[in-house]
Image (cartoon, rainbow, N blue to C red; front, side):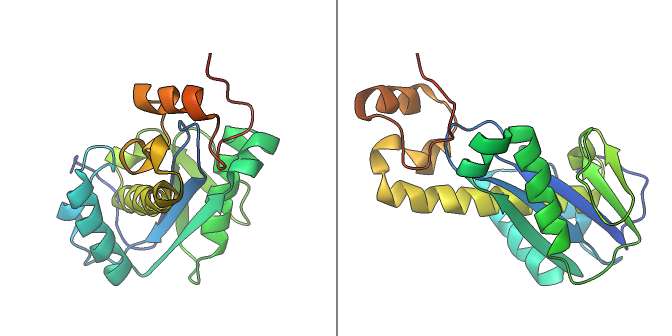
Length: 189
């Protein structure tokens, strides 16, 4: 985990996963950690291995003061664009929380419209434990959805590519057409 100089307790960290794929929903995690949370298991979800993310996910859901995952569907992404859909998923995650945090900090440079002030923190998923935890929740939850979609359309390889535009995924699209869960507006030339 990268160094940080923020308190742990009372902060709601929010982050998203799945902005870059051609297929599937975008997810967002919102997490409020207790002061005594074992932050050494946390890091940016992109840095952790799949096994590391899964272990951290279980510790987060068992030990967080509150947590939620919000979603925006592939249809919503096509209708309102990926940025707006990401912010919508973040808002849905925040609104699903039961507790009221002292402060809300969102990874990146954009903030969803919330009922309380929120702050953006660029690279927050490598700085702030609650954002790291939110990043992990969002990534693991989305990966699990893509694994289920793989069982329905295995020729796209969603269990491996998670909907991202890998060479094999693009070739499958050229061969069979778009997935049932393809985001509207994407073209493979």
